[in-house]
Amino acid sequence: ALDNGVGLTPAMGWNSWNQFGLNVTEELIRQTSEQIVDLGLADVGYEYVVIDDGWPNKTRDAQGRMQANLTIFPSGIANLSDYVHSLGLKFGIYSDAGALTCGGHMGSYGHFEDDAETWAEWGVDYLKAGGKRGRGEGWRSDPYTQHHSLAAPSHAGRLVSLGAGREIYYSICNWGIVNPWRWGAEVGNSWRTTADIAANFDRVFSNLDNNVGLSQFAAPGGWNDPDMLEVGSGALTLQDQRSHFALWAAVKSPLIIGTDLRRVAISPESLAILKNRDIIAVNQDPLGVAAERVWKQGSAEVFAGPLQGGDRVVVLFNR
Ligand code: GLA
Image (cartoon, rainbow, N blue to C red; front, side):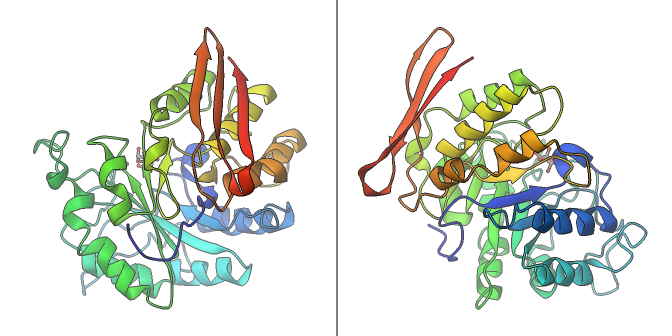
């Protein structure tokens, strides 16, 4: 397994993508970071603030280094990262193995080591790495045309060596293509097992279904990732939000909030779900064994798994 000292329990934090897509700004990241502290989310374990797609400039600088789009990040990423750190939180960023990200922005292809150095300079604690490279080159069938395997020695490996004294959580995002649960733990700390989630019942629970059967691959240091949380977003009822959160916690998914946390944007009820200490404790249980679906009949199903000290978590889910 990737021995980088992080991800011993699933990552907890916030990411801009589900709610804001490509519309990220420095102000959004600053305000959200402040809210993570002010709403008490930091106190229950949420720590990574991750800017997803949309932040880079269209061109590299004269030294070939990636730069932020300074129109939307006027202080630059290093300053923003300092600010996030000053609040006691950790800072994350997104890039892609391809020349372009899924959102059409600049990716890391051909610059894995340069970019790893940039992340380290910027004080990045978490990298979400998309896997777009190789489209049209048989990428769906051959893991070695995939970014993550190809780039592992340079990109993830370089991050590990640059992280000496600093730890960088490496989040693999290739949508479950080419069985990342079989190789993900060698190069990263979690791997997406599914297509993108969306804030509706079908998309949330089809991601759960697609994550079934994979519990054996999760362990401290490397986790299955059925995608970020939709608690507080879209058309999900409170009951669905509770099921979503409890099940994600039990299968040891990273708990990455995807909703708008700024003033009045999240309801007290949704916030209470995200702050449920008992459920978070299941997710962060040091034994690190993911619950599995052990029974299903019609719309009723049971997920169960062991916890430290001989306890078991059992989730009864009625769709
Ligand atoms: C992919 C990922 C999303 C997000 C976008 C950004 O679709 O699955 O989570 O990172 O790329 O373009």
